Image (cartoon, rainbow, N blue to C red; front, side, top):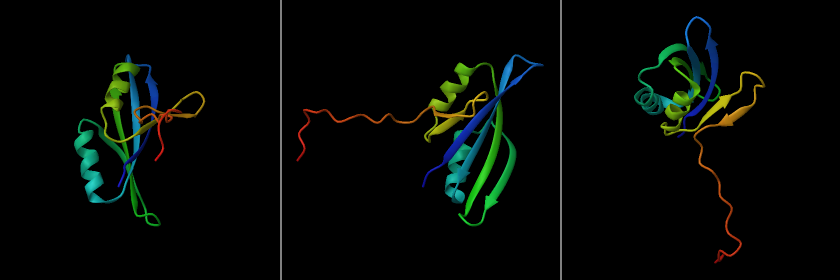
Length: 109
């Protein structure tokens, strides 16, 4: 059970804010409820279903004042969020756990 999320931004010229779109892939009602509890202030922008994998794709949108407020919000989520760069299209995981190398002095049993 895991929610997969990808986000991208659009700069709004009429306002001094950034519109973020979050695309979340969930499997089942339990994950959908968990997503709804973690992002209650987001508005639904679209929804789809993939019958081959039995997963639901949800598009949510919300305005943020700046990129820093978006990153602080994304780090508070319990599932990893990958942000796509609007310029290059490359992804970067914002709140993922860093993998650490085992120390060379650590004893292997």
